Amino acid sequence: MCGIVGYIGHRDAFPIIIEGLKRLEYRGYDSAGIALFDGKNLKVSKTKGKVADLEKRVNKEISTNGSIGIGHTRWATHGVPNDVNAHPHYSNSGDLVIIHNGIIENYESLKKELVKRGYTFKSDTDTEVLINLIEDVKSKENVKLGKAVQVALNQVVGAYAIAVFDKNKPDEIVIARLGSPLAVGVGENEFFIASDASPFLEYTKNAIYLEDEEMAIIKANKEIKIRKIKDDSLVDPYVQELQMNLEQIEKGGYDHFMLKEIFEQPSAIKDTYRGRMLVKEGIIRMAGIDDNIEKFINANRIIIVACGTSWHAGLVAEYIFEDMARIPVEVEYASEFRYRNPVITNKDVVIAISQSGETADTLAAIKLAKTHGAFVFGVCNVVGSSIARETHAGAYTHAGPEIGVASTKAFTTQITLLTLIALKLAKVKGEISNSDYRYHLQELELIPEKVEKALKSEEHIKMIAAKYKNARNFLYLGRGYNFPVALEGALKLKEISYIHAEGYPAAEMKHGPIALIDENMPVVVIATKKGHYEKVVSNIEEIKARQGKIIGIVTEGDVNVKKLADYVIEVPESLESLSPLLTTIPLQLLSYHIAVMLEKNVDQPRNLAKSVTVE
Ligand code: AGP
Image (cartoon, rainbow, N blue to C red; front, side):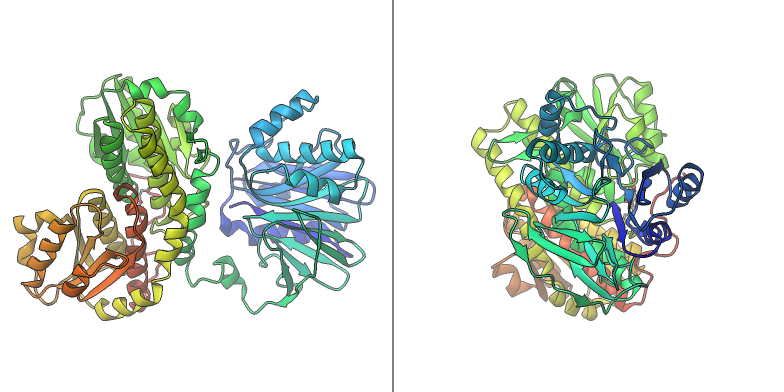
């Protein structure tokens, strides 16, 4: 996620902002920038790369005096990481500068309007559109910066945390938030602005957290006015004294990044379909797909290449693409695909899935596919990553940085993106009725709140984790769309708790694994209402007859499995094709809590790296 830091007060702003940006580096970013005002000149310096690179560049480019400024670390969403796309962004007049964390969904239509009014753009960012919209309102309606921001934001659809500065009004900074966090540190005659409190905790423990749809005008002479963006009404500031330490703030108050990222999934899924899925209009739009739709429609088959959790997302995609779009799909381990001399033709479409965009085997598989003339599409989470640059086209999961080595929100956002692609292709091919298509969109839009609900079982899951944390082996079973989820659940447990676990299609039990079942073998069975439910129940009965310990992942209100299983964990009902987005949640939490109880290093498990950039 992007990082925002600002300062207005009696100290030198530069060191506070630079050190504050360093505190936000844990959020992940690819470029950084700063704007300072020294009473006369507005000075901006920005660069692709790290805060340390910015620090070097600033000292060469601009004088660093001035007691008001804003700084930014950018996690690219629109526009690749480079100096031009880095924040802050100027308005056309050069009077206003902005830094922004979030995604403006309607930036293209806003940009078209502004171009008609003579505005020009240097960058590919949605942020530069926003600062010129603010300038346009300010000049047209001849209002102050605060009012211009308020009016402009009422034309914006999307998520933002912004800080804006006008060099002609150098005693104030205007901030606003919707969907992205923004905190104000309240000092003695000074204010700090940041995405979280870590940049200003050493200066003050008094903080105001802006709520969604609130903005604030912060003046140098220690005044802060908070207003509702909708109607400009005043809001009483609530100053709280912070109790968290630095490390807790970086993890958003969670004990580990992995838990934070598990709980970020509702917003990460929403950010992934934001701007791409218009439910009311029944539209799915994704440039990488729209511009290459014929290649997908006319493909002989889709080959999915990936590793680890991304490979499991690919398996879910196989069910979705074949079931909905009727396009043949093969899912390959990239490490096998690259060496087995596969048959690839120019009628094949290859989809490469990778959170990091740097996995060596996946990158090699892409290069091999390209030598045979296949069209290669990337699904990555890191903008400008090697895989994103190597593929012919692609789409980004907007999961935000995933710090925990064990992939969680990457998995659910990959499935979300692949579901949108499959629905789009099914619609274009006429393989899905309009009513089914719209029903899927409506159900997908409900997923974030259903994930929120699934997350509420955490205490119950902790109790189950305590019961089985000393087991030496687990089995995970699922059918249909949930067979890949069984594999993913087993991988989660293995990689962070070091307990051996295997995932299997539930029907495979009688072909061997059932020999393993006894009273020491916990078996996690995904038995949601949709998708071969009766058959899974009979699999559960087979396990029970052999004293296996059964943990059922069931649809809320289920009674049949409840009678048979030792424990059940409920998830909300949804379409079978969307159920992996829900059934994976309890499996993530189960593995997390078992690993914590076993005192493992959850965020950096032994022997593992977040991105396997070597063979
Ligand atoms: C999953 O929890 C692991 N972190 C690992 O299997 C990971 O999914 C795999 O290395 C692929 O990484 P990528 O998605 O960045 O390509």
